[in-house]
Image (cartoon, rainbow, N blue to C red; front, side, top):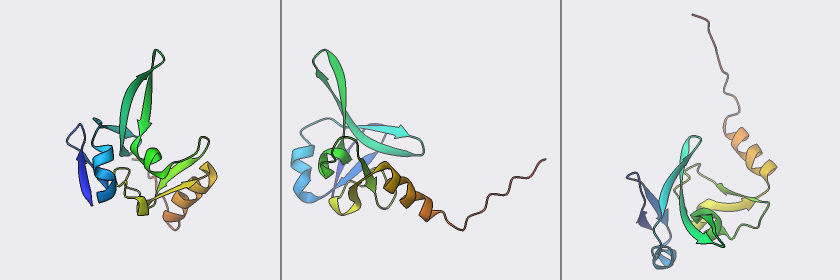
Length: 107
């Protein structure tokens, strides 16, 4: 396992065999909801196109999600990534929180 330096003091974890290929670009840490992801931007046809490291490594088809099995958006080792439907992704994350009850008390 190797680390690729990102912006905002973050690092992405990648497999050794992917390090040289990925490290040819400058990657940024982008926060979405409650986790960071590694992304890069490029100028294509007069527009900025973002590429996510996890989607590139998992070769995720359009219309599908890439799930980080351990919930860490910067852990881009192939064993931690899977392509899935949005429903499968949401169900997998809901299952992690089964049995938790929220208790909202008025002050």
